[in-house]
Image 1: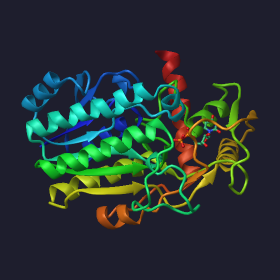
Image 2 (image 1 turned 60 degrees about the vertical axis):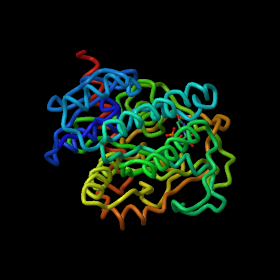
Image 3 (image 1 turned 90 degrees about the horizontal axis):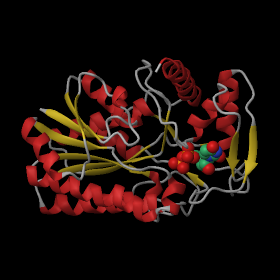
Length: 331
Ligand code: UDP
């Protein structure tokens, strides 16, 4: 059987494609290449360029390939953009996901894995690792747009022959340990990506957004998870569903967090040079602290992270950023 990866040209999707191929899976990708790249998709995958809401294209993909599972990454992910363009986010993340789920149900595809986010939690009431059972209070249209898709999946699975796994990602960072992929978007706003670009002289400076949060050093705390560990959790989710494991909603994080300043100190240390940083006001939609309780993913998926080490995450991100500069120089 084959696996359809939506957004396979994007950051996490491109790693997923490599991981599936390594696991011996046949892989089909759909990507409209609005933020992803064709060159980021492993050549062994079969690529369809187009939109996940294009029902005719989806039914052709399902007719041409023996697909038993969809892993759905395609979507928009920038929290402040979702605050300024909420309807765009609901369109791209929620409305298009609804169309994709409808195509999946129509074709009778039995398994679905969805990229959700810690942003569905908002700021937890107590500053401790969050379990899946805490109250969901997204603070940005991005978080709401993802939560709405979770709800659609739950209800579609109750009504149809569909099993799903929702994985709520904390802060995904780093790059393929074998150097085949990484975060390649020039418009990425992720902290570790930006800090690595500054460290390598690709950007002159960066800002720390907010120094007055109720956290130990006043900057936001996040649970940074290595992208390769994250895609391995998806593989486990796929195996579990195929074995009849049923639907699941689980956090993907390590269970401990780092502040923005701690991340910047790590980038300085690992790279061996200073960073030019200024201090700016809070960014819209940012919760003060969000750290995962990953116990459920570990228990249900048998997921054992391999790269739970901020130095390694930063080293891999720096290596990719460097490789990307050489690649762009020869493009
Ligand atoms: N951040 C920052 N400077 C930057 C990018 C991010 O201070 O140039 C902060 C951001 O405000 C947040 C944390 O780093 O507190 C993580 O942000 P990121 O965009 O990486 O992920 P998010 O948590 O928003 O998904």
